[in-house]
Structure formats: C-alpha cells, structure tokens
Image (cartoon, rainbow, N blue to C red; front, side, top):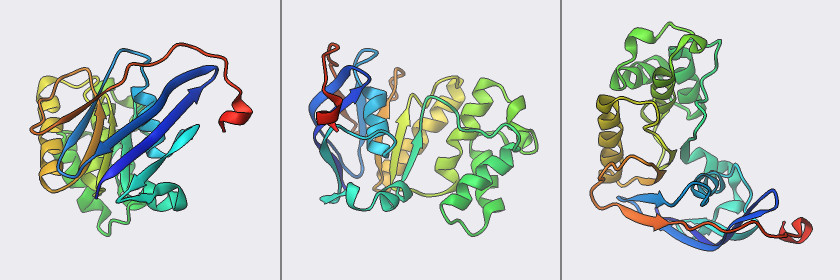
Length: 216
C-alpha cells in the first residue's frame, strides 16, 4: 500500500515550484514535509490529492499509475488543506455526515457521532458552520478522518488553530493510523514526533520563464 511520486515537476503561474521530485510514503509511516514557506509543501500535497496537475512525472499507488483511475485515487484519500471545508449553512453534524456519506458509510449518525466525540465537539452538533470559531471549524474539518476510513491521509498544517489538547488528539490519531498500516503525508510547523516518521525536505526554486504549453 505504498504511495510514491516519481520525477515530479510542479508549475504555478510563472514559477517552477519544484522539479524532478521523488518521494515514497510507506504504510505504517508518516512522511513529514519540511521546508521554508513557498518551497512547495502545500503544492505537493495538492498534487498528491489530484487537486493540482503536475507538469511532469507520475504518482503511483502500489506501483500503479493513479492517473489511470483518478476516481479510485480520490476514494482512497482524505485531504485536509489550509481552508476548512465546512459548509456554513450545514450544522456540524450535517457536515460530518456529508463527508461520511461520500465514503459510503452505512450508519452516518454513528459515524458522525463518534467523530464529533473524538474531537470534543459533540456539544456543537446542531450549530451551523458559520457560527464556529477557527479552532472549532478546524476540529469539524478534521472529523472526516475519523468519520470514514481512508488509507491515505494528506494533511496540510492540521494543527492550525488547535489548542494543545486537540493537537495531542491529532497526533494520537496519526500514530494509530500508521500502526494500522495507513499512509500519511503531512506538512506541519508543529513538531508532532510521530514514531518512525520520515522526512522530505523541499528547497523550492526561483521564478523562471516557463513555456506553459510545453509544460502541460
């Protein structure tokens, strides 16, 4: 159940974000992305999630090119980005039930209830998303990783806006996911000290003139 990138190029606007990048995220391990701001950590996670098209290179799951079946790749992952995907008119419980339903969970109420309890927001179940604080939105957004199983977690600064106690919850969930053979790729400025973690350091590039027609 390994996830890997081979000779990846990423271009955003007129900037070559990274070039010739290789990575391997193995089951049972968390691959931590490090590097200065602008080095491409978020871009790599978006490429890995299929939200941003790489200019060159391939992504593979168990040795198979994920480009051959992008729907299957999306179905195997949870992507949690900088922006919290909490629908403002849905209640917290409705948001989590929605994500669980996308993953084919049968008992949506039970799945959502367990996820809300894990993140300590059961008391917010009936509150609309628009009324949540930044930390509450973050917890509601992260609840998807509990509400529905997925082997691949792609997490971009998952502890942003979280207190110490909830940061510990996230750490414990990542460790448990790895112990169960899951795969995690994560960018974080908060060291979580995940046992057996691997590190990929991105250096970034300078703006360059790019022929976008040739790049894609």
